[in-house]
Every structure is written in C-alpha cells, then in structure tokens.
Image (cartoon, rainbow, N blue to C red; front, side):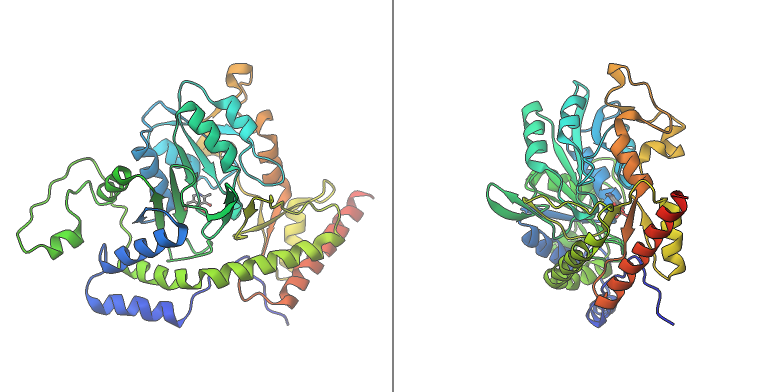
Length: 405
Ligand SMILES: Cc1ncc(COP(=O)(O)O)c(C=O)c1O
C-alpha cells in the first residue's frame, strides 16, 4: 500500500533540534542573542539594511501598516485573493481594505486595477507575493511613488523568491517596496513553527518596530542586560507583545543555512510538474514572468470548466493525495461580507456589490473556485510526482466524461 502524499512537509532535522536545545539550556529564551543573530543573517540574506523579528506575519503586517502611517478611516489597496491575514491586518489599524482583482495567470495584484483604485483616501498599497510568486513590483512601486504612498509587501510566502530589478536579480525583501513582511509558519518555505520578519531600509521605522513588538518599551532586553548601570524602562507608546522567542530564532538560523538547497529543490520539482502536466492541455499552469523566480511555496493549477474542483480534490484524496483549493477570497468570507468591512475599487463607478460575488473580482473568485494546489515539498520523489500527475489526469478524465454525458 503506497503512502499518502501530504500537501506540504516542513524540512527540519537534527540540526534544528540541537539548535533549539542549545537555547533551552542557555537560559535566555526570548529577545536574546539568537533573535539578534537571526535578524542579522536574514537582513544579509535578502539584502535589507534592517530586519526585525516578530511573532508571525500577521503581526508583521499590523506593525508595518502602523509605522508607514495608516490610520483609522484610511484606505489600503490590496488583494482579496489572499489568506485572510492580509485584509485583517488592515482592519487591525482601523483602515478599510479596498480590494482589486488579480491577474489570472500570476494570481497577483493587477497593477492596472490598482491604478484605478487609488484615491485621496489611499494611504498604502499592500502588495502580496502570492504563493511565492513575485508580484509586479516595478509597476506597483512606480504607482506608489507617483502618488506618494508607501508600498508594503506581504511576502509571507516569498522567502528566497527573486525579482529582476534594473537588470539585477534581487531577493524579495530587499525591500523593493518600502517595507516587507515574512511568515515562518510550517506551510512556508522556511519555518520556525510560527514566526515573522519585517525588513526595511528605513532606520526610524525599524526603531519603532522594535518598540512596538515589545509593549512600546524604551529599552530592549539585550541592551538592559548588557548595561553596567541600572536602567529603568519607559513605555513610550501603546505597543504589543509580538516577540519572537530565541528557540524559534535558533531554528530559523539553521533553516536559513538550508535555504539555497531547499529553493533549488522546489524549483526542480516545479519544473518537473510544468513538463509533465503538458499532457493536460486544458489545465492552466502557473506563469513565472521572465523577471521573476518563484520559490514555489505552492504550485497552483487552474482546472478546465468541465472539471468540478471539489470532485477532483476528492478523487485525488481517495488516491491518498492531499490538495488544497485555490487561495481564498476575503470579500466572500462572513467576517467581511456580513459586515461591509471592505470596499470594491469600482464602488464610486456604480459597483455596489458587497455581496458574495463581485464582478470586479472575477479573476480572484475564479481562482478560488477552480484552482487547486498540488503537493510540493523537498523530499518528494519522482514517483510521488508521477502519482500526483496520474491521479490528476484520472480525476480530470472522470469529470469530463461525467459532464459530457
Ligand atoms: C499571503 C499571506 N499573508 C499573511 C499570512 C499570515 O502569516 P502568519 O500565519 O505567519 O501570521 C499568510 C499565511 O498563510 C499568507 O499566506
């Protein structure tokens, strides 16, 4: 009996376990030397001047929006087609998400729609690198600059992804925008169990982020610990507990060392899917623009119209293969649709559709309803991939037979 194939599997080993144990035995468990070392290694890896470790990417996005100056009542342009944390972070600061559609083949924000959505109330663009595929940052940064609004990057899935910037390959998070936020959740390419990182080249923002993640405290634990004099802290502003622990950071440091080989392997597996899946010409494969190198955090295919998503997924699950449906759309979830907590960019032009379907988000809705994510993780064998492909072919054939009578 063959083993089930999961959708993802974190790539962790003995080294991570040893690193975590070393911290546990050291007696310094949070906001200590391992966090500082992880921040330094991370900023070096992406080429950013500053990196601030936090508890997860949702807290990273919350703090990023605060430091770039988004306030209650402001509008932030973003994708509905993203994990709900993207929109939630905008709500955390009391602002209103203005959702624009995605491009159908990259699953990323459509810059032409972003342009139409910019108004006097827009205080930021929150651009997502969905599933690790870099979004069109050249176009989006130009728009942001032209309107004097900061560009925040939701790079939750995009560690190690690259973009060609003025002819040179750069890591996402350098940051090409103003500030970028990463996730280290186990479904991501690098994991610390849970965790996040914020990169920026703005020294003042980095200072603020460090205060905000630790209750608004004026002195960091490491500075107080190293001081020869008694230090009394102050609470300079209303802050949060968004700390990363040293146990997480120590794991993250080991994971960073594995990044190059993890991404090389993920890109090889994606290439293999791209080649083999040409046997299903009606299944649309994800597009990697010439200026982008994805880390393939997820591998997403769009099913033809005669294949019902849930039936295909069920048939594959019956074969022992886990899949996931296309990325969710926040505007269709009760947390948003029931409360009118979002705005369609076209509202002012006659679109009052705040219900479950929005004409102006049709690519997003189509991707949620008709795309599926296939298993992709280091350690996946050639035979595993062959099984996935054979199972998908079988499911699609069954579906088209039943739909064609
Ligand atoms: C695009 C995107 N943004 C934000 C998040 C939130 O990340 P975290 O779970 O680290 O808070 C996720 C997590 O899945 C995500 O995919």
